[in-house]
Image (cartoon, rainbow, N blue to C red; front, side, top):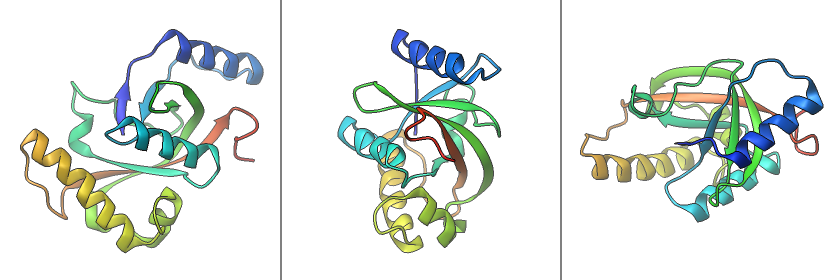
Length: 161
């Protein structure tokens, strides 16, 4: 996940959600997935299509100068690789643990690849490994990971029931 800045487009999307749902609270985070625009859009499509209802990030991404740590009940505007808002979710579950502590159910809920634990670990070792190489930190199976599940609440045609 990558924290993104709020834009007029995300603000309009958020205001439409609040007007249509009478949702309380005025704050949200903006997130895109992956480390390139094409994959970010592909993963956003998995959310919009109903397959992806979980995500994971390294705890170190959520440092004071990094992304805000998700909170249960918090809202997130998901943008695609072009910065277009695609959905709003509410975080429903958070767990911190080693990367290798992922289970089959979480791998399935994340909705990527073959949805197996082994496939999930392979993909995330590679993704986080690229991040480790770029940022100069050691990558290992015990690296502290934030596991997040969410429910899509907007737009209505993609919201969870």
